[in-house]
Amino acid sequence: MAVSGRPNAIGRICQVGTSLLFSALVAAAQPAAPAAPPAVEWLPEGAVYAFQVNQPAAVLDLAESFKITEMLLGNPADPGFRLLIDTLGKRAGTDLKGLIRQFTAGGITYALYPGDNSVFIFDTQSPVVLDALQQFVKVMAGAHAGVPITTPASTKPSAPFYQEFPGNVVAWSLDGKQFFARTGNRLILASRGETLKALFSPRTQGALASSALYTQARHAAGPNPAAWAFVNMAMVNQYPPSKKALASTDLFDLILNGAVKQALGGSTWLAMGLGIDGKKLRLHAVTDGKLAATGAGAFTRPGGTGVLPNLKVPRELAAVTLWRDLGQFYAQKETLFRSEEHTSELQSLTNL
Image (cartoon, rainbow, N blue to C red):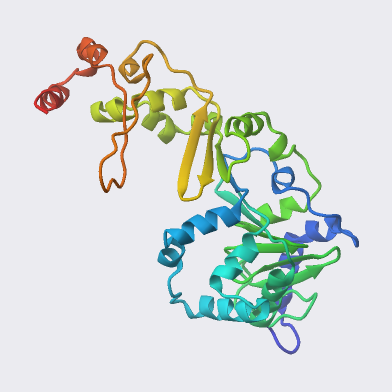
C-alpha cells in the first residue's frame, strides 16, 4: 500500500529503515554494471547446501512428459498468483509453462547458509519477462520509480518497499518475508534483507565456486549433469541432531542404511549429479567418506561382486537391490542384538 500526500512521521521512519537496510546496494551499484558473473562465483562460500539446474529445459521436458508440472501447478487458486501469471503472460506472450521456461532458461541456483539464510538465483536469457515482473511489482505496490514504499501501519522491517538504484539494480519486498532484487537478466530471491544486501556489498570472503569442498564435490558429480547438488557434510556432521541420526544403532535402520550412514558420518562433502537421457534418469551420489571393514555396520559394506542388478518384472514401478553379508551379520549378533527388543527383531528376520 502506497502512502499518498505528505509522508507522516512513521512513514519517514520506515523510509529511513529501508534506506539503511539497502544502503550497500547504492554503494555497490555503478552506472555501467558489468555482466553478472556465474551465480556460484557470485555467491559467498560457507553454504550448507547448494544445488544448480544447468539444463532447465531438459528437466522441464521430463517433468512435463510425466505430467509433474500439471500435478504441482494445476489451476492456481490464489487470486494474487493468478493475477500475476495472467499479467506476466500477456506481457510476455506466453502461458504459465512458458513463463517458467523464460524465468529459468539461463539456469537455477540455490544456496542455504547457516541461520536459515537462503538465496535463489534465476537467470533468464531475455529481459522481457523480468521487465514485465518489475512493472507488475511497481503497479501492485503503488510505487513511483526511485521512491521507496512505506506504510503508516508499522515501523517494522516488514513494511513493503520498492526502490531502483543506479547501475540497473532494483530491490523490493511486498511482505517483509521475501526479498527480491533484479540486475540485468538475473532475479534474486533471499530469505532476509541482510542476505540480499550482502550479495551487492564488497566481498569479504571467497566465492562458493572456489571453496575446496565445493570444488571437490562438483568434480565428483560427473561431467555436465542436468542438475547437481552439494551438501557440506563437514557442517552437517557438527549439528547434534544430524550426528545423532547418523550414529543411530536401530537394527532395521542399520540393515537398510548402514553403509550409507557410516560413509556420511565420516565425510566432509556429498555430491549428487542428475543425468537425463530421454525419460531415463540417472542419479549419481558420491562422498569422500570411507567405509570401515569392521564394526557394527560392516556387513552392509558391498563385497567383491557388488550389488546385483534389479530383477525385471512386468509393470514394474520401482525396485531396489541391497548387498548384505549375512554371515558377517550373524557373526556380530552379540554387538547387534544387545536387548530383548533386538532379539525379537532377529527372530522376526529369521522367520521371514
